[in-house]
Length: 114
Length: 111
Image 1 (cartoon, each protein chain N blue to C red):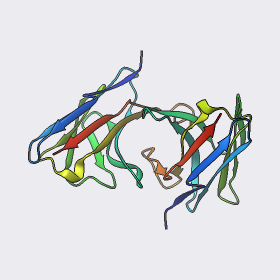
Image 2 (image 1 turned 90 degrees about the horizontal axis):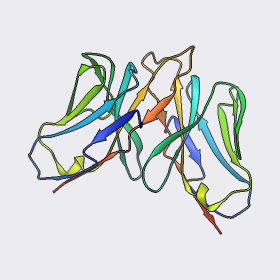
Image 3 (image 1 turned 120 degrees about the vertical axis):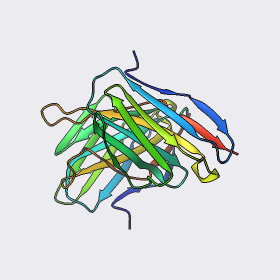
Image 4 (image 1 turned 60 degrees about the horizontal axis):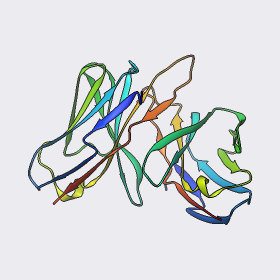
């Protein structure tokens, strides 16, 4: 009953190959986010979505694309993976209810680009 | 300069000690979050504050909007409190519930 699941949990891929990470939620939350976490940088926003087919760029969006064709799924694609995209990727969801903006995070995907 | 600064970056303490982690920010905010990330990687939301003080078990979070500062306190610390504690704020200029993140404070509690 995690409410949010990421897949895969771990992936090793070669430079230049496409990679897609999936975030799936069962909470029917409007907002979904993709972050990457690297040592010394904390969490950095890659892309986010504020509804089906509504997405926007975050601070580190270069080299990444996203799609949200239905409420429950938010996909992050690395069109041509590079070593600089080796990182831990977190998906998060949030809802709005009377001003409360709680966030729930997925367990993360550890991606290694070799 | 980062918009959200945490201090200290690293903190090691003995079991039972009172712990304080600080967060300062430079933007106008509508909310401040404290989150916890355990060594296994999972991130858990601890508190969301817009004013005053909140308490949950041994954790206390305070915020001073005028001084743009928040603190997270842990009373009677325990080795299981060892984690990275992250402060994040939502700017009043934001309409899509994005957060501005601090770099985190790594806390180690020794038995």
